[in-house]
Image (cartoon, rainbow, N blue to C red; front, top):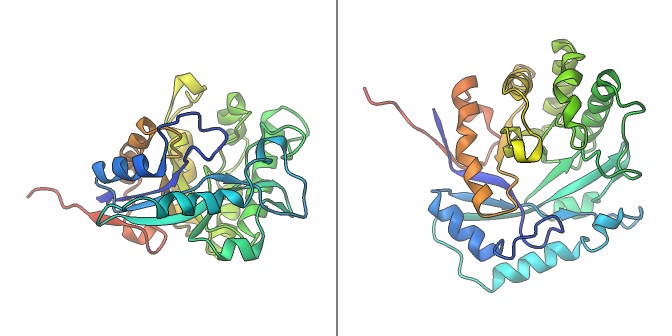
Length: 274
């Protein structure tokens, strides 16, 4: 099976939602090296599109996030055998309303595009009704818009409705396998990977107590549609970076191989003892 050697979704103290002062680039790199990772992707939140007024959450999280991160990294000695990738988690407020421009995206190593931060009320488009059916249709529409935007390297925590997690399982039940395969096919056709996210791991402290069968179905159908994958802990603390190892559960359960990963990601094949 694949042994994960990358984490393409780690936040630093530069993200407003990251309240740990220990979440510095230097500490993150040391933790990543301790986990045996060969590749780490910094993905702080940004809204850098000057054409659209940002949500209050993003007013301090513009393109300066990238500049500050580069300055932080320039001040430290990078661990040997650990490739550092500078990216971002950019917001999609709705179809055609993106928090990053094409020029900005092209200057980064990767862009994770979030299409489901529905808790940002009045900014990110929400379903018209708080019902499973409306949520399911809205998730599909937002997903396909993000996948075809031409901005994303990968979609962050795909089909996971932040702010509506109590309806997550019921909403997914309203969507047929064919609807999901068709939507995931849009991502595959545009060369956009799907993130296998630390947010897929149950966590009762954050109301993430859904059945594993839900994200397993998403990833399985995405694989059928021809999607490639990235892995990301979505860590906001050093402790949460440990989640990247738990995501190997999905590799084993779905028999993912190197061919299922987005090209360029660090991973190795481990062969069982004979």
